[in-house]
Image (cartoon, rainbow, N blue to C red; front, top):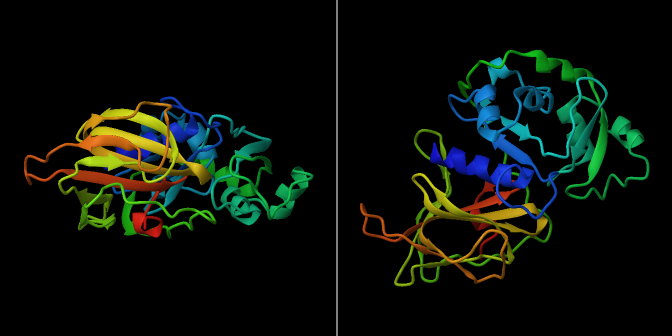
Length: 285
């Protein structure tokens, strides 16, 4: 459950709905549906009106959501009117075809509504007009259903071209648990144990978007990097950075707390692409 709250926090920071941000509200992201989720609960936790969340996910049937299915969380600069055209901010990995498929329209209609754009050079955060497609009618689905037991995991998204490599956050640390799903099909971040050096360091340069505490996670630091990537450091005892601070690779971000159960100093280390978790081994060297 705590990992879900961490995911929502990252997405809210990207959307400009919580904490201090330096980017535009267009940098929103996605959330992956887990067992027991409802669309209304996700909307409530994310601080997004339910109708707005439904309109940004026209093909999702709220009473038939599937585990592994992804919901798009809108940013503050995006618009989804009851009728008319959407205002949409380009996300990492987007193409006109992908956007058209999500909203039930065609890439040619999007291209025609955005004169002068280069479909092969879309920029993250670029605002597009999206003509409403017929699939938007599906937003009338009831929003009380829970995610069913069928699992349909979404494939990991490709990282932006030229991303990384990043350094490891610990010097002399060891991997205690790899990134991936546990026996209950719940996604878990990588767990690293520190050696004699209990300091976690920034894996790349970026801006601190969050430096505070969360229940069960202790001290947490979230750093926003170029190309809409994020790194997360949790289970900290003392924070060495503050919100809005610009930091370089290798900057000490926190001191890791000692786990009373294991006696180790363990760091929860998470990496995100537009708010979506991905395996740190894809980028850390």
